[in-house]
Image (tube, rainbow, N blue to C red; front, side, top):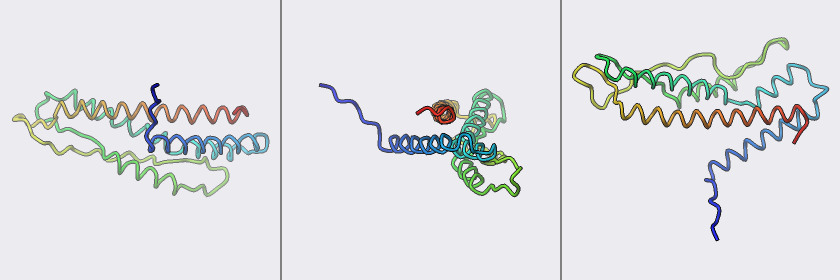
Length: 171
């Protein structure tokens, strides 16, 4: 008999935390469905989404930069560009936790509106025409980022479905 492969512990921890987060939100919204103010409901939804919208925006920006690098692989003098994704996520996480409303009528915000700094990639080898794009590396990085974008999109979609079910009062 075949045994079912077990998911990695890191992946199962992520899913477990996500599920606990959605259950907590569902209970909150179900109990206070009729008693919550608009601001409280929006804050609860914003907290449930977490940093997912910012991650998706950063992945989109990175996909655009990488596709530009690939498109300009033969352009003389073109310098490959990218963002430091890890530091951009750190800044967005810090900004999300530091934003406070000073008045009850202010719209709750999450994440940072600031765009991450676009950097020039340090080339392994520069072409004779000054182009620093390594097509193989760019394609590999693009595919990795595209897969991670899809995973981020799926995570956000699951969170939105959880919120919708919580609002409807469904499990």
